[in-house]
Each structure stands twice: as C-alpha cells, then as structure tokens.
Length: 111
Length: 113
Image 1 (tube, chains in turn cyan, red):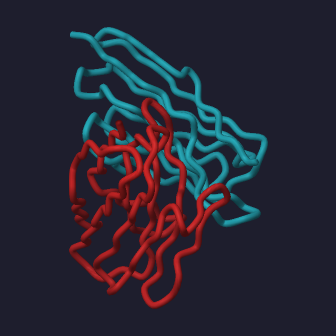
Image 2 (cartoon, rainbow over the protein chains, first blue to last red):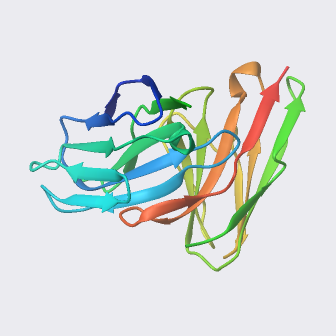
C-alpha cells in the first residue's frame, strides 16, 4: 500500500509565525496536489505541482515538489488565523495513476 | 472548476437502516468520485462512478454495502446500506482529473447510533 505521510500531524502557532508542513513517501508520484479543508466543508485545491524540483508560490504559501517526486513541502509565511484548517497533500501514483491522499496536518493559528 | 452540492448535509441514522446521499454538479462530467473521511482523518476513495457503466470500487468497499447510481453526467448517489456505528463518517463526492486536482462537495456528515 502506498502511503503519503504528513508531518507534523498537529500544529498550533500564533499569528505571524512561519511554518512548514511535509509530505513524504517512498513512492514516486507523477504530480502532487495540496488541499485545505475547513470544518463543515470539502477540501479545496490550493495547487498542483508536476515537475521534480518545482516551486510554486501562492501569496504567503510556497509549495515545493521534491527532485525525485517522492516528497513535497508547504511553507506558510506570517500565518494568519484564516490559515487554520486541515492541510492535505495528495499524489497521483506513477505506477497506478490513482490519487492517494496524505495523512493530513491540522493547523490552528491563534490571534 | 465546478460547483458541487450534496444532500443531505448531515443526518443521524439508526443502526441497520440505509441512507442515500445525492451529489449534483453544475456541469457535465465523465467521472465522479466518492470518498469517506472518518473523524479527524484523511480521505479514502470508495469508488469511481462513470455515467453508463457500473461503478469501480476500491479495495475494502463492496457494491452491496455502498451501491452507487450515475443516471446522467451531472448527478450521482451513494447509498450506505445496513449501517453500523463504524459507518459514521463524512462522505464526499468530487469531480476532476486525477492529475489536475479534484473539486469537492461540502460533504455529508453521517452519524449512526
């Protein structure tokens, strides 16, 4: 079974702090996506990265796809309370072409 | 992008009963997906529903327990049959390409007592 492990599992920080969430696997993915899910809502797609080493920026969020396409990171600069939510990475397996979701990181940003 | 609605948004059901969840998309799509999200956990794919053919189920999920209908290109239903407390979860439908990203409905929060 392919696994996408996210770390940390929980993160509680104050507004203005920086943070990084990691998404790791021993498997290769043809692309990787990041989602944010708020309570009572479905996950919302933030970004898709497809090239090894690719870096994408979305305002205060920076996403990186590992060179070997087995891992990814999400860095948030100067976190805001609106960043609170469950962050999920999801990778399309290079072997099976199926989308696999990571274990999730629950972020709480306090004012 | 796509706008997806689900009904009901939440329900509390008794053990042994069945619940049908509806998913409506604002545009025609070939594939629709059904996921389960257990409390505090990530998403697990239940099945893929293509219009005009039987749904494809993932390992651990069977048609008798989770029958799916896909009568047209904008609508699908998932039934959770003969429910037990272990079926208490959020059920989500989504559309989109595997590589391009998924668009999710708001989910149906099911509690089985």
